[in-house]
Length: 350
Image (tube, rainbow, N blue to C red; front, side, top):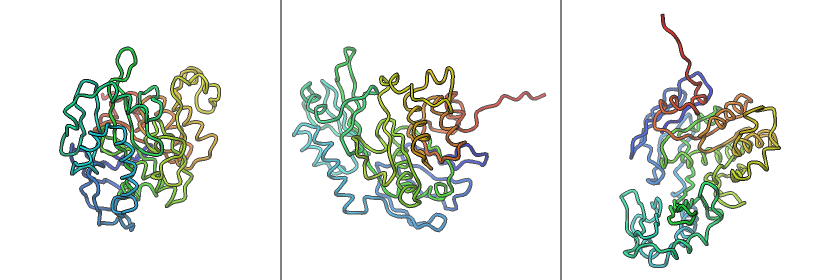
């Protein structure tokens, strides 16, 4: 995973990603030695070195109270499963490291752990099993994602051609306090940060902790634009993992025509104003209506989102965001996102 300072000419902080292990290799600012940094599913991991004078705290799982809170939240996810499957998964020795549960009609259900897949039942999943699970979660949005109120878990649906749900991916969400401590010096400096990495390496977990750190430790006005409710969790009351940071939810894209009328011409005009997507509009609304000092957004994926991010950073607002990719070269070669790191200019050599 990469962590890069946005919109600056100084060399970025680069973190090379490997399938099972991340190595922090700072090129500037951060004055710490390379440390092994594990993806979120392998926590707890205890850091003993300090960064710029700040002691490194242990992750949340070192606290018994937070362990109990996670157990309660995990129990709410497991309640989506039939009784036999709950019993079988509860006996697994890696229960607290569960990554996700996969249920597809006509196939055996699987629980995925860092060590591999575990079959939860010898009986294939039925329509009734899917209906039991979906009846206990919120409404599925246009992106086929739903959640469980006041938790960080994500339920993603697979539908057939008629729109009927025939499969579910129930992904475990975790708030890990202290997971962003290695970036504390960059966060404190007020630099805009972009975390780049493939799915599942912990980008959202880290920016959630950055939001908490900025709001609680540095008393900043932090606004999270929660595209799919993964940072602050599902429901109207945000998860405690974001601390005192505030959160704005993004409406479904099918509501786009209802909110376009409120778009300010200060940011975009003409063609872009007519075709702007809902999450960009919420991003703009957050800046214009709520006076944030910091904006946090997950998964910048379109050119309009990238343009809005650049505009926000130019206004002096600290921006913390994530994007999918494996290397910085992936971002440079992505025509939608290259603007985040300055873009590419053609030069003729004579």
